[in-house]
Image 1: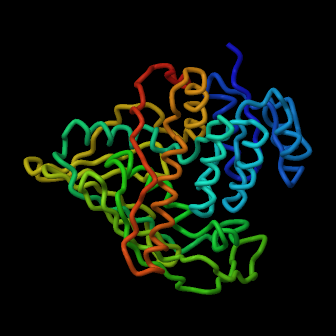
Image 2: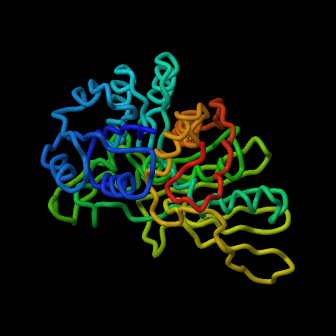
Image 3: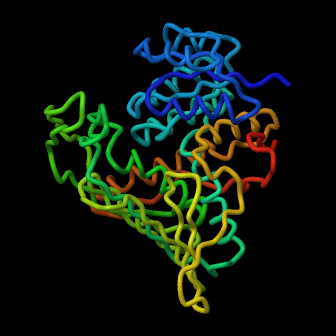
Length: 369
């Protein structure tokens, strides 16, 4: 069977792991060609990996009839227009997170995909990895009883001290919630189900930031988006969750993620990763114990969601990283700030139903149909 052909728009930092995994790990997909606003980046990808085509721009890529799926690896504020143009050209799209910089962008893209009879899927796909999939099975099988709540924290002091080009993290489409929130919200809804309503508070703690990393050392960034966001979520199941994301706080670790049940507590691994560790505490144990991972893809497996999308297209099922999931996550994230601005709880009306869990297989890189 001919592999599904992928065209990549945007060959920045995140593209490296995608290219590694598409070309070396996942079966059934191939990179046909790439393009980037910085031609040297695209040329480097073609020189490094078995990629037959280098396009002058995304429109030339979209016009290639051999391209089945456009992989959108552009910056967050560019996701909407690149995805929109790809859909208009008749392509399926797998996009990096978030789906759009606003809820309205995401809603329009989903409507357009339906009108074009095309599929959108997208990052994060870390929830398909060994860590979150094992946690899902533990919860579904009752190891902590009935879930009653959850708490997740992403704490760091921002990107200007280490990232080579950190400004976009503080502009439209950026901020800790849209940047890192997708990992946490996606994991939460795959563990606990749909969110029913949210309330939140958000602020900009430091209106200006000085870059200390190269090559922009000394430049000052005007911060346009909230960088301290905390919120509560009421799940349709009745569970209540807390989510805190910030670029304003000094901490020695970025992640803390716990799910609380009637019979125990589950410590979930960093949802920005695919693996563990996973720890559980039940009353009879007296202490936390680490549990083994019972699913595959514990290493950095970005493009796992893309490979699953390709398998879904072949078989006619829905991708696990579906547009329904992307839109639900986007509404949850943007509603925290909306709640903060309006001073009231915001209902989440974007539907979400969990897709089937991953299928355990010894054939790494081969996704179930």
